[in-house]
Length: 435
Image (tube, rainbow, N blue to C red; front, side, top):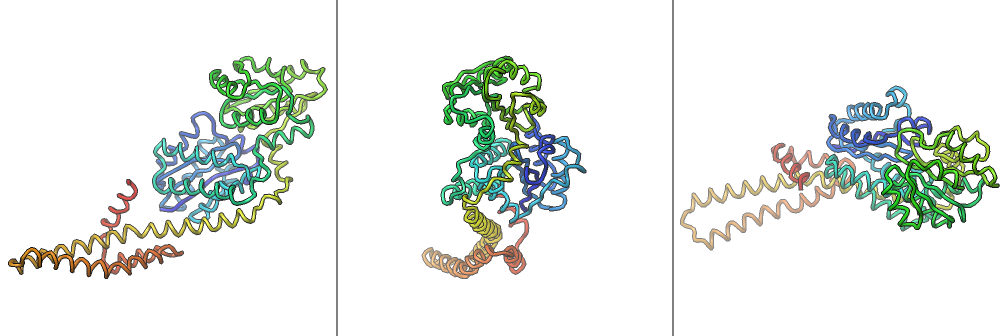
């Protein structure tokens, strides 16, 4: 089996297409289960964020895997395959591992170096585990990716800027509307991104924090944690008119803050010197893009953040050091996987040797029935020791060689030289997968 990644992100597709392809409600779960069920996929995981949708799969056929996963992405995103295909990227085996490790380190993020992606990868792994679509291969891969990401953040200066998508968005808003300190802030949504936004606003020193969410209890919990207040979702319009700064990030499939709502709020606060500042971090968007034409309103959304990120220098983030970590970790992971792949063959070889020893000892008992127990035990121990010594060095060496590129050929050579039963090797592999 081999790792395959098929996906699209802000680096491969325009934001307008990402918005149309965004998965909402139950779509991510349905896509994950469909991917795990389609041939030739053995395991599957889905990374679904505001600026990337990626399917990770363990497959036994490359071309069929690419075709079927691409088709599923099109079907569940609602964007036609013909339109989607030019914006999809495909990574296979070591290149797929390299891509995931780069993502975990923040190298592929819209805001380079942001650490929130680690939490998103952890969520992707937990979901795949809970839904029983991830097995041994993807569990090991994602666990290692999380470790690599943590290593990059602890050993380099990639997170020196300390930015997340929230802080980067607030920075863009501040250029026109001023800093968040002292302002009345409204957060629409109570999920992970909204929680990060609310916590960031409190750190920035907002004067008042209000949280609105379709499930009022979630809004109340988030507000209570941060010393804010919660309002029912039906009162968003009124809360909007009282706010100076709004951050919206819900999982809604359609517009949450319409142009009419924002226009009415802007009119009510027309006496204020500063414009109403809106930060839309949702995908698909929460805020009607038409509000950009309204007087007294300034909107920053994923599309404008993507443009701004392209012109933001990352020279101080020690990216070369992070890339070296990724390269080293990919090589180490590949070597470990190749070495592990030969283990079933080595176990099957030792099992065959053990069976031969047992058969010969039984034959010896038949020929020399008069042996006393002490002599019989000594003979048995001697024969087993000789076989173990004969096999020890070759099996240790073959494991070392298997860790090198092309190491799979050594397992094939062992199976051929010793005429190992393929079913015996497969049985060991299955046992290791279940354990």
